[in-house]
Every structure is written in structure tokens, then in C-alpha cells.
Length: 287
Image (cartoon, rainbow, N blue to C red):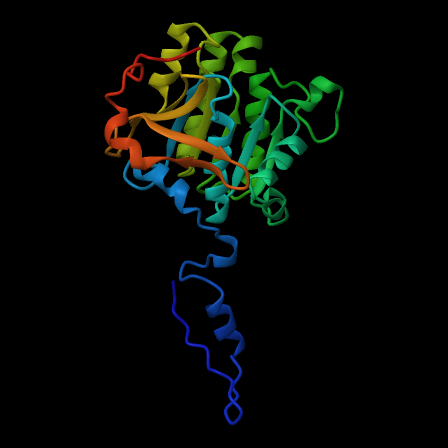
């Protein structure tokens, strides 16, 4: 960040910044506005598990038990990209866009701000099921139409370094043939990678046939698995980075909490012994 020395106003010495100085004082060297970048140090621990950042031109699967935090993690990654002023698209099959905005607001994120800046948009594949026809994808399970709709939106947002979140894959696999769903994922991933962006997918453990689940895992560049583990009378959440292309990963289970107003917070102080705890082996997934 460019360091700007702002003159101190005294009784005998008063100066004003020029217009160019004012612009320089409020932007980084790469043109980003620091007031729009809200660092969240606890979540940066997540990136430290695989070298500090998600790889560009990549596809990431967030898998895990229902209620384990898949949507929260996907939205938190998306919010980080928005804070870097990267264009983002949310493809929603599970809820209305207004519900997503409301939920993100609960964690202190402000998606409407980025909508007004033309940095965030929605591919609404849910509202049509409720009879809404305006501003939505009319045939959400015609995957060719969805792909065309998405391509047009990517072009409107500049088609460069775009992050796309598809939450979730379950309706697509439930309502379309598996081979068409796989082809759709491959097509979106190719478009995103060509634009130097990131594709974030979510899929619940046990929601599709194991063979199909492993097929999706094999298609993506990174897999982050979330687990709900019963400990005594408590259900605790754990995160495991199973693979990440072009990154050295820390293959250990890390406990985390979801905190209102902040989102996901990892408990890295316990990372040294989590891997060896009974019931937390790589295959221990509670459905």
C-alpha cells in the first residue's frame, strides 16, 4: 500500500492535499480501495492451510455433512474476493437471492454494495420454481440455457478473474441426468479457468451415489471437506483440505466455529493433536 504523509494542521501551518494526492491516499498501488477491503484475520487461517491463497484458474469443491457450514464457507470465500474487487456470480438453486443477501448481512458482509458497483450478480435458478418469471432463469434444469445465461453475465462483469459460487449441486443431480450434470460442471469450470477465476461448488456428503461423488471430486482442482462430529453431548465442526492444486496443503483436521457477525473461525491452536484423536481419522464421516 502506498504510504502518504498527510500534513498536520497547526495554528500557523495549514495545507491542503491536491486532488491527485487525495486519490492516492485512499487507494492501494493496484487501484483497490482499502475501505472496501475488510481484513478478517481469523479466516485467513483457512488460507494458511494451503499456502496462503486459493489458486487462480481453479475449481474447488466444498463437501460435507448437512449443516456443517458449506454455504457459509463458500460465501465467505466469495466475500473475500469481493473485498479484492473481483467480480463474482452466485448460481443459486436452493433459495431466493434475497435470502442469500440477508444471510450474508448477518455475518457483516454487504453484498448489495458490490451489486451497486457491478461486481456481484445472481444467476437465479430457484425463483422460477415459485412461479416468478422476471429476472430469473426460466428453465433452470435446461443446463444449456443456464450455461448461455451464465456466459452472458460473465461478459457483462468483464469476464476476467471471476469467482462463481454454485450452491448447491444437489438439485442439478436430482433433476437431470448425471452425464449432463457432469458436462455442465466441466463447461463452467472451463469458462472460469479461461477467465483466470475460481469456481466454488458445494455438495452434501451422501446426497449422490458414491461413484458420482468421487467423479465430481476427480474433476475439481481442490476439495475442502467439512464434518460434524459428535463429542459427548456436543456436535463439533471440523475442516479438512483434502487436495489443492499447485499448493502444499496441511492435511489435518481443524476444528472451527461459525460466529455471527464474522463467519468461520478456525481453532488452529489445537491443530497439533487433532489428527491423532480417536474418531477423527480420514474415513470418519458422520452422516
